[in-house]
Length: 130
Ligand code: C2G
Image (tube, rainbow, N blue to C red; front, side, top):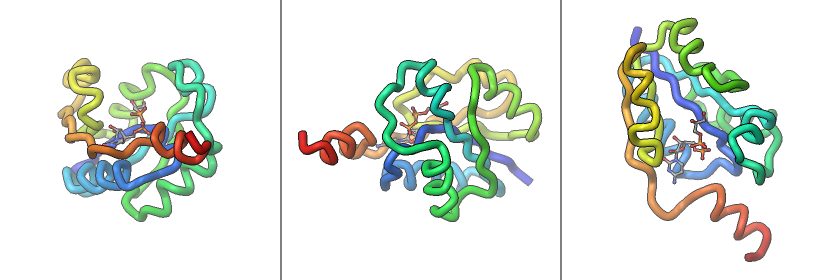
């Protein structure tokens, strides 16, 4: 069985996220999705997340695309997860192109083209009437 992993915040889940999850799932037979915890997001400078971890995890589960959803809590967890879950493919959007090449030591790394014209930032701005 080919196992794929991907990660994200998935705040205000939108079709860009769904598109990413669909294509990640299609790279193998089993998809694990890591959802960032609030403290991990704060530590990496992402300070404006609107939904709680539980809401974001539920939204990812509701897509029906993830076989397993796990929290992502710390820097370095990706390597631990790839080993722990015997991951074959790490997939992430092309806005991260090159940033995760260090994982090639552990599994295949695939950058999937980002969906244009949609983002959590845009939705947050629209929600706040900007
Ligand atoms: N994404 C996409 N198209 C968009 C928006 C997002 O393909 N229009 C993808 C991103 O490239 C990412 C995933 O959806 O692969 C989740 O995006 P975010 O929720 O913004 O999470 P991000 O900060 O990219 O998390 O460990 C965390 C990850 O490294 C990255």
